Length: 401
Image (cartoon, rainbow, N blue to C red; front, top):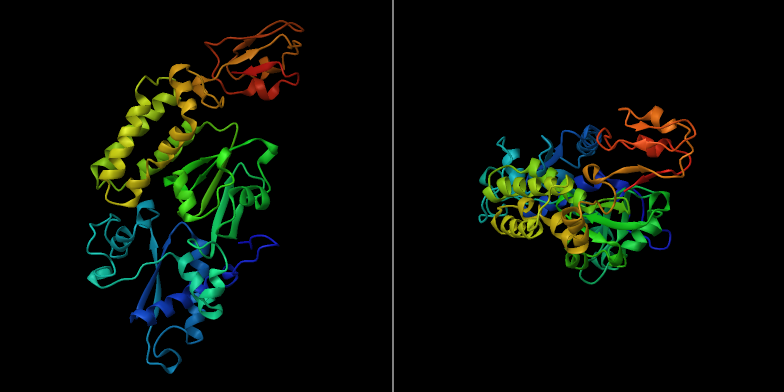
């Protein structure tokens, strides 16, 4: 992880992880009278598991975990529990079910985990990022932590920059920085200096924030106003070549797959929305599809038990809100605005062709014909739209429409 910027220092909690998390859990356990803690980690993260195991063993060796810690009479033990990678287990009651050896599915609330949680005992659940702040705050004071961020969104937040950005990775920034400062000041801007189009915030269940809102402060309240969420801190950057309809389809495909199936609205509703998006990106969209997507999204948000279903439609709703023209282009003009959806793209050879035959030789299906030093032609029926001709041509004679 990195500190934010040279001009705006942040609490460097990341340098002491995972010990900061272990210390915080011991402090929290002492505060509420608990003597057992669990860190739930996806089994797909072996490096994290290995390092956390080392840190827990070190803490035990130093007497920071175990019986009668520091002679206070306080006992606290900490164990790791591996999850199978289900996205829904980010919801607290589904996580508890998984800890108990059951299928990870959310439970009705109330009772809340604070009243009845793990094995029906009062349970405090927090993200490790939240806990990692605790030792720093106790050592430096709440006022010092409050100097970072804004009045309503205090402190710092770790974000994962990914996608079409020059400098991807984990960055820790004070809340209140603008998206422009994060993406261009820290992330270095868009790859290949392409035009910034949107950023998906909050993971698969987040929302797309368009370029004209790039000066939005990164606070919980301001990001929520855009239709996105801060969530886990993901920032997936998109440039002008990204199709927003296909991006919505991509994220909804993920949440559809990760639905535990308990709620009808989430299990069936996300499937129906995905079917519509697949039709649209395949050039088979029809009048009324946009309105149907909006109606289904509202039903899924209102009828789902947990946060997965309640937020699953966000990528669709925000792309419709900010990029409705792209949906309309797909449906009514049978055209992909970003020239990205394979079914809606065509390749044409212009009169700039020199007849070098390079494209014809590279075409895997023999869809290009023509005489040497003469203009070539693409057979639209044979063309599989692989784009090899566009990559091969050195004279800019291939147009993608």
